[in-house]
Length: 396
Image 1 (cartoon, rainbow, N blue to C red):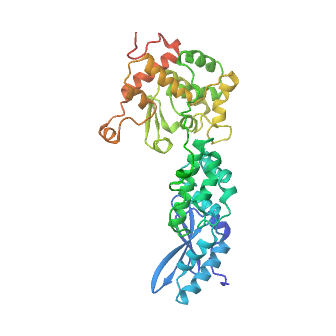
Image 2 (spheres, one colour):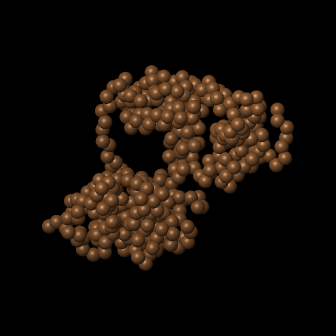
Image 3 (cartoon, rainbow, N blue to C red):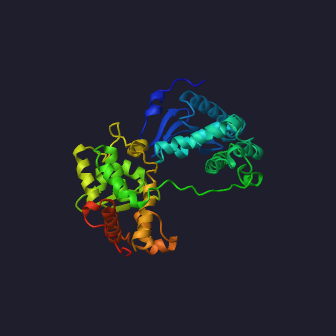
């Protein structure tokens, strides 16, 4: 066993260290902290006269004591003229289970990479529910395509969306295992569909309120003064997604220019999006401003975004069966049926990509002025007390 080293790492420091870079422990062992916060163990030593760095795995899965033991063993192998990397790869192929590999991928590629907490939970829970009971304890190098069929078959036709998501995550885990030296040969998920029945894919539309009923719904929401009702009215007026509204901050709002700028990291397409703010939307912001905190529509916990269940609460209390996301479809139906607004304007109001990559590369403008006109007309439809309900380019 290695002797104690002055200024060595501690278990607490391994958990809490945030400074990017390498932090030495001794006997060639380093804790490597990435900019994203991910922590990896690395052994640095001399093999065949060359300085090499060999990864030892995530600090979330390998304890400090285990990393020290491995580093001490590798140092002895290197001094005896051996290659620790060959020994590592041999041991990894023989010992790592599918579940351990999946959790490693989750730690390295999902946690700490700008993903929402909900997505992070769903990513691993999908595998925990459907894959771990069948192949979780199997060595990842030994899993066969027939076992993948056993994982996917029970849900392939009954839950096609879940099955396709599961298939993609299985493929990701095995691709990582092969790259990291835990597995050789083909990815067992490739071409697995040949052994599965054809899926009858159905397009499932979220329940959307007919646009004729929107004025009455907005009136009912306006009669309550709860933060959820305010957020829901704002969502309807801006045709935004639930997560975009729930997590919005005052730093994103420019009251003077009447624009809400959603940063790229909060957008589904990963592109910054400017949202025109109509007068009713600005009135809601004015009412919310009295809270004087960072979040525009805060959740129950200080500093945390409103939960999606909270946002949908007013609909449930009112006995409305339509979904929050369905209001985007309501807006789209209204734009198509009651206005002559070009299709691309309505789609851009929803932050949808319009045209192919070449067309988008030549479009230098986000057509904000035209979108502002359309969203203003939508506000007048939703809140007719503003005046006559006259849409932009209205069809007579």
